[in-house]
Image 1 (tube, rainbow, N blue to C red):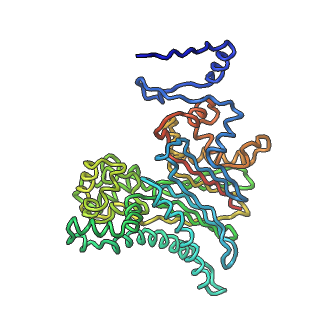
Image 2 (cartoon, helix red, strand yellow):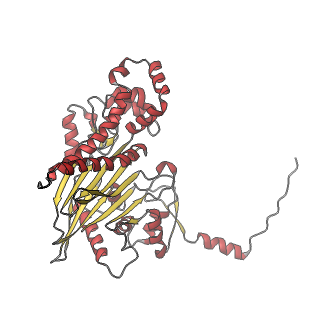
Image 3 (cartoon, one colour):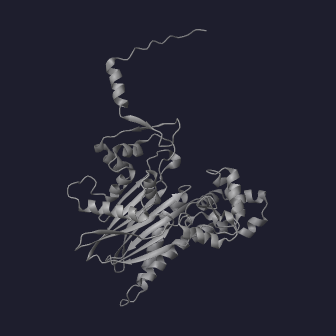
Length: 434
């Protein structure tokens, strides 16, 4: 055997110094998990942190709304599943403003579907309502609330109807496996779109304000959070109000509701999740948890196995006894505003924002969290000295959540070299109601 010898020159002292310089700002962490595993992160200088946060959060600003949507993990399977809308609609009587956050789970198809269709459905129904009113008749807030609620429920019904039209329950019960496979394969493209929307889901948190900003409607379906901040112009003090309750199993009333709807089914809520599987108790999509279990066992299993092992799919299917388990009934809140006497802001955020504080062991009640957010945004609305992030109030909230003044923690959250998510997706909209 002949060996080829390779001669490598020793690095010069200059090259050694350069190599050391390149790694001097890199550190490792165990993320507080203990054990031997470590992950690398890059300590960034303060001046670079804000620039990087802007870039990574896709920060944008309009005349009245600031937004960020953030997921620092770059692995393809974990790309951000949040979506949001900021729209202005020229309708009878003036310009209405629509903002929304859609927090997807288990994939991108359903959340993309909701993001594409829901705003136009609300706009069309709202326009029809406004056109139907006599000129001398004032708009009743409950009419708008019904428009919002109906649009959300109709959208969810369309996902379910697509499934039942393609594969009615009575037909499925009579089909052999061969017939079923032939039916699906002959219409594979259509079936693939239907089945992905039925095995994924999305929450919705939206706000709608009228042209004079005298009214705001907030709809929630899921576990995102809306906070209304107001400051009396004479006193100058900010106050915060949490608008909605969270639709998840951490909310005792939601757990009790599900247990009352499914009496004697111990598995309807377990491990603080619906059927032991899903954290949100209300959502669009997730149709496999809203229809008989035969759909899961015979047609959805292959899609669910993208993220669930077959044994778990079978286990969850065995718990589907009296569907639906996930509700598509949103809660709508109406608030009258007085912008002549109060400065008002509205914060919408996906649940990832609040979760991040919990991950950092910051023990705050929900109200303390809301007070913190409104106080922080209000302070920077008034700031005349710190201009770097003043232009985007959502970035200010995000900076506080990822570490605030702790540059080491912020650097770690932005630059951690890890294939799995180390935080949930975070989307924040801050709206100034003027």
